[in-house]
Image (cartoon, rainbow, N blue to C red):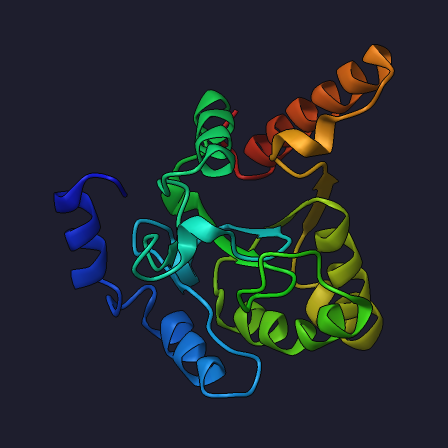
Length: 204
């Protein structure tokens, strides 16, 4: 997204057919009292993606103006860069995934329990749009928590995904621990989860 030509192409295609329903949902959710949220970049698979990748909340690099205005693994931030590297290493392309957050509005903070509850309805609407959904990929505790709340309230929607994979958040802080063995185990868990995702999508 630091490349002006790439960013302009994403902006021009933000309502391309495969992301139009999702970004129209984003537009409608921006109108409420909770504030702003980023669009999903058309680089991703949108409603045609096989995997739904859920993190915590949109980071600063997604903000309009100071950032890209999109959820995108080409955003100019370390977490996006690390995700792109890990997806690429296992043969998963940006078109294979649609990014989302347990709390999709911009707060740049850990969502509270009530906010994770608020994130359930938008996630359900997104799942209903994803016609090729095979895998839900939960990265981080908040993503797991949000999915558990959705599964409790909407078990039929949760069953739409053939596979649910949960692992640590791709950010560096998720690996912080004084015990090097614990840090190593977390890295290995995350690597195994990405491999499992690739296998579920038929990429390995």
